[in-house]
Structure formats: structure tokens, C-alpha cells
Length: 407
Image 1 (tube, helix red, strand yellow):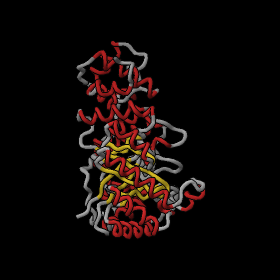
Image 2 (spheres, rainbow, N blue to C red):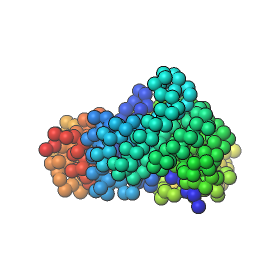
Image 3 (tube, rainbow, N blue to C red):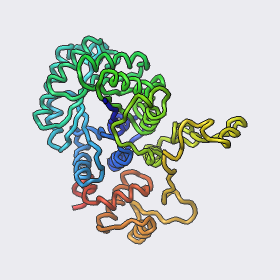
Image 4 (tube, one colour):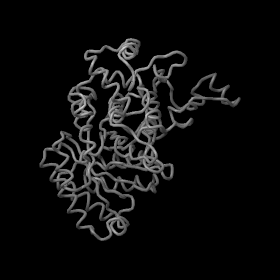
């Protein structure tokens, strides 16, 4: 039976969100939480960019040390052979290669530099370069796929498959898709090319989650596995991307959906609240009060009829149990009153006080202390309990984030 998998793009598309940002250590924490949630793959960033290289090396080392469990790490590059050749030696085993495919983009983005034949030629050369370098899986992104002529989109996908690609990513780049249309296009495209079509949905019409679910169902209808792109808390460019937790909840609880799908990832939503709260804190983007599952009001009731019904049986007015989402965090740095923190300008006494208070075992005190200072300097905010635990558990791997500073 075909199954659904998650490929989260927070560390690539999410960090491109305007008016916000995330440190390389923060991106590392995204991978940590995705692994805890049981997501199949994380698109960790741009390995061809010079400032991402130390971060990529650190992620590969952390993965090899077991910090991310079974989470697969993938890189994003343009579908340009040179970008792929520059990225492959860093050790990532999975890639997505992207190029625009719609006539709108060919005319008004490429400005005549590429026609349809040239787009396919560029993409094929990039895929072959990746496969020749020993990359295990390659996804090919059709940017603006939702506005791409379907006949050409099929030709593009078939050429990618012949070159060795494992999936094609259908990008609803401007968020104009609707569930009925995208479901039909996915079923038709997946049937025509005989490989999974990956959803990548933006939320400009507020339908990114609905479109992702509908596209995935189209894949399953065609007998293919489905891969869904998500971002934590629905962040992303403009109005954001499909929200990770909302999409999982929709697949598990949606009427007419839950009994039709099998999720192939060992998902554990008991980390959902911790991840959502951490992301809101790290990105500086407050979590909406009505955010599905993890917002403050997701299980709040006030009106008489609702309160009465919920007190009698919470399932009268709640679709799913809140316990599945795990506890709300109560981190050391958020305590009120007298509290001693550790960070960029802290000393060894404060560092040991905090680590002892959290019950964190330290095997490399000097290195761990310096990493706490550096990571705090990078984030510009007090470190969370999970961040401190990761630093203490993998100091040598995390030291790769700061080449030359911890020799």
C-alpha cells in the first residue's frame, strides 16, 4: 500500500521568511525536533553557500553520531550542475534540485535565457551530476509547477526520471492551488510518470494544508507514495507554507481521510508543543492563539453551550485529544523571580548551577561551556533546556559550527 512521508523544509524555505532569521545553531535544533517528531527527511539548507558549509558539516557529524535518529538530511540547490558538484563533497546523501518550469517564469524571470528544452537540459545535467557523485535520492523541483502547462510538466518529470531522479516536487509557488484541482493534477501526473509527486504548497489563499492533503491523496490514488513538504508553525515566505502539525492532524483526524491513508513515518506528536513553542521563541514569531493543536486557545472553551458540553465530555467540542501533543514546556530560562542563567557573558559557576539544576551530565565541561557561550551569542537569547541538553550531549560535533574558535 502506498504511504505518506514528510519532508520538512523549515531549514530551507522557512528560514527565508522575511523579517525574521535563525542562527545555524537554531537550524540544528530544527533538525533535532524533526527527528524527535519522527519526520522522514529535513531539507537542511543550501550546501553551495559558503556560510552554510560549517553548519552542513556539523549536521552530517551529528547525524553520524546518532543525534538525529533516522532523520534523513537533504540539501537544496538550483538545478545547475556546478552547484551540485560543489555541494556533493560535504556528505549529504539526499538532494532536491530546483528550476522554474512555467511559461510565466520562462518569460519574466529567465527573460529568454532558457526555453523549455533548455530547462530540461539543465535539470537533466544536474540530476546526472548528483547521481554520478553517489547521491542516494534526488528530487527535482518544478518551481511554479501549479502554473506549468501539464503536457510540459509531464515531459519535464519523465526526463527527470530517466536521468535518475526519484521524485518530482510540484511547487505551488504562489499559493494559487485549490484542493480539487491539485488532487486531480497529482493523480494524473503520478500515473503518467510512475513515481511520487511531492507537495510543496504555499498558504497565500489559506489552503496550504488542504492542498497538501489533496495532492497526497492524488499520489495514493495513482499507486505512488506521497511526500509532503511542511514548515514548523506554517512559517515561510509571504503567508507561509503548509504547517507541519496541522498537516499531521489533518491526515490523522480528517473526515474521509484518516481511514484512507497510511503514514509511513513513525510520527510522535508528543514533541509538538515543545517544537512549536521553541520555534516561536527562536524565530521571534509569536504562535497564533488559534494555531491548530498547539495554540493557547486550541482547547479553550468559554461560551455556555461549549463549556457545558466540554465539561460533560471534551469530545463534544474537540476533534482530538490534547494529550497527544505533549506537555507545554516549562524551561529554566522562563522561570520568574530569582534565577541564574548561563550564556554569552556567564561564568563557570552559573554554567554549572544551571546544568546541575537541569540534571544534565557534562563529560566535556570546558568545551561545553564555550559552546554555550557561542550558541547564546549566535541566538541572542537565553538558551532553552533542549538546547543545553544537545550541547552537552554532542559538544565535538557542534564545535564544527564554529571553525577556528574551539581548536
